[in-house]
Image (tube, rainbow, N blue to C red):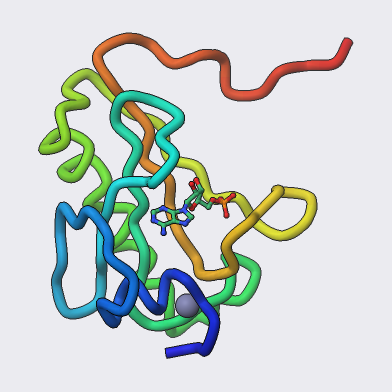
Length: 118
Ligand code: AMP
Ligand code: ZN
């Protein structure tokens, strides 16, 4: 557990969350400010700051997180697809520095992924 990390506090139970899946290495819970009808966060229980901080030893864990996204999305009601996003660092506008995969979905197509300025 890393002090002052909100997601580590969710893992430990110090901060409540709306959990939809938990196993020995992964926690999945609903985003507190959902951007879409289905908006889940898939996180590793161990603290990894961002996708820029993983090591080769984390590749299997990341694969299991990403590999189960479809299962989590479907169980949450996003039947016909979903979107995964991993915001990373300043350029990626990451707010919480505990690695997380956003799983976004619902029953209608989402807006375009990235808006162009020109
Ligand atoms: P990011 O900008 O990719 O770092 O996204 C962080 C996400 O964490 C945002 O979508 C927040 O709404 C979400 N979030 C922050 N605190 C909590 C919390 N206590 N429970 C659930 N989701 C949270
Ligand atoms: Zn953490």
